[in-house]
Image (cartoon, rainbow, N blue to C red):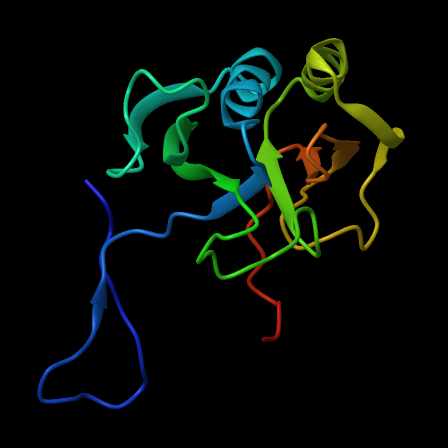
Length: 163
């Protein structure tokens, strides 16, 4: 079950409560199936839902997917086609987005991602200011859709971190 979080510091009469965060990744139109296959092969993702555009017919050659929902670890990510006439909130893919994946076997995870089609962005190294999500060793790969993935050891708990 998702942990609920209340947004805002002051108590409100009707606080806003969030039950989940689902990042949405947009890929070139007709590439959602390829992206889902990549995330399954590279990171062991599991597809849990698929939503087809209601005005497209099932027998059309390329039905426009509104989203494919994948589960990766305990997180959910939506993968969507980005069409020219899309009402999507973004019009470009792979801009300013980084995902952090935690695992104890960094080398094997990076190798698996590269075999599935990712490109290494750096050697596996000890994290020194690499990012808040990284605890120790970190590898960096870019997937075929322009998304950067930091594959790192589980983050250490830090009591002395300032916001």
